[in-house]
Image 1 (cartoon, rainbow, N blue to C red):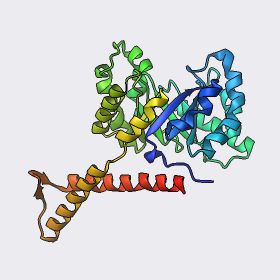
Image 2 (cartoon, helix red, strand yellow):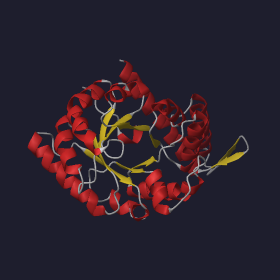
Image 3 (cartoon, one colour):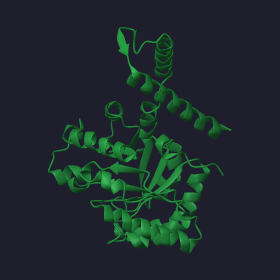
Image 4 (cartoon, rainbow, N blue to C red):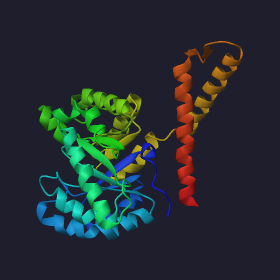
Length: 300
């Protein structure tokens, strides 16, 4: 069995209706890196028993198709413990928790996941956590929330719930969440976890591409989505292109040649290259190579 794609190389995180068998069975064809079995808002309470019953077989199928398997349970003071008791039998790679506003929410999830790993014979510590930030209170504590468990590999920022909590008016340009998205990635980067950007919740392809390009400029390398048709677009934007890799190689070569001559910076195409630009170029090349290696392994 192949190892799951490392979290820093997971670009598209697709949320899926928890009890919709047709959607769930076809989800891997979207090409999304992470498939999230959504048991909270996407699954009405009467359908949650059905969704839980699907988990083990569904996760095995997704894993066989090369996807990272995630599940979003309900808050633990609601249906979350019942969700965990069922879905942990399928050993998801990642458990996402919604409505996280305090570090102790994550600590409690860690304790519950640890207990189920022991009960079900799952390697202890093998299940990662993904707190979901959906309130202003959570946003300003993202760093502390991310540090509440060693299992936490990233945090995901919501769009609709956060906008509602702020009393913001939603628009496809995302202006109302611009500051929140900027702050969120700073908090996640400082905590050394993956920042999963909020989903673009309109259907137009041009809009999701524009929104993902803007997110990438901020430093995001991962984005959540609610429409399977958006996965290819998000993956494309968050994967370094051949032109970008060639330019990065030129930057690295020019800077290293300058360094060999004892210079601290060099001009290339009218732009002065310094250490941060050089470091970013090397990082881009490494990311491109890692993503292409995963693609090669998937085709082998």
